[in-house]
Amino acid sequence: MTLDRFRSVADRALVPFVGAAKTVGLSPNGVSVLAFLLAVAAAGVYAVSDRAPLLYLAGAVLVFLNGWLDLVDGALARELDVASSGGDLLDHVLDRYADIVIIVGLAAGLGRWALGIAAVTGVLMTSYLGTQAQAVGLDRVYGGLLGRADRLALVGITTGVAAFVNPTALTLTLVGWLLVVFAVVGHVTALQRFYYSMQALE
Image (cartoon, rainbow, N blue to C red; front, side, top):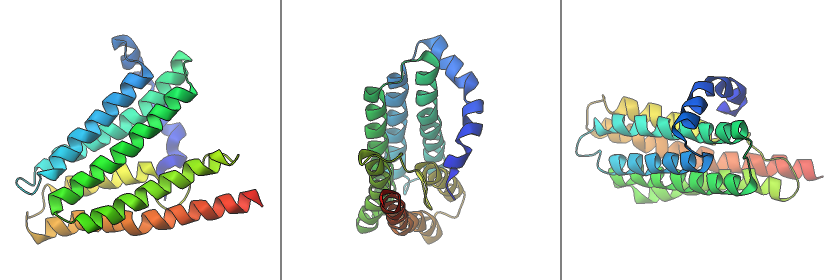
């Protein structure tokens, strides 16, 4: 189910955005920081969305922009021939913090902290297993049921729909079920990546 297999298609669509970033003088690290700030803004909007459900739509737009800029930073680094380990580290650290703040914002808006903790641990373990494979000498693992691109797409779509649903228990159910998916499928994806890595090491 992972959207990462369409990375080459996204790379072609990024060309005008990379050109725009070059024109305004943004560095790849600057794009990474901007993407993170959009995630923080989305989290803030989600945290107060119980007061005005249409805020979910604003959060969805911010999440999609975060995901898009997360693709632009790498493409820009390759275009400028400045890709580096430091830039890769910064990008991954900011991605993890972005994942955390978005899910915390969703949980805060629902007041479902236990579910938020379960979801954020699933997301973090998925990402950890993806990079830990690389740490033991394998290629970085992007596979499994639910990668980062899938998560961002699900957040954007679900919260976008939630903005127009009757702002009662059903809205809570949509976003609540999103956290359930992250909690359950996130841990399943982490275990899949662990299994793939162990098989590759044998």
